[in-house]
Image (cartoon, rainbow, N blue to C red; front, side):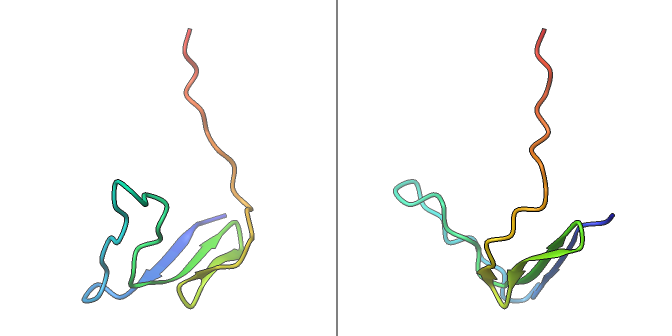
Length: 58
């Protein structure tokens, strides 16, 4: 499976701040992960189809 991000290159902007770091950037319209729509029209859909890959530390 492939992950796909569809964005507007002329209007993408990071709006996160140190006080409020968990803000989605503006201009990212759609994100598809493992065939599931995660961001739809700039809003999170609640889907969490991916998994976190952690680095093994020995």
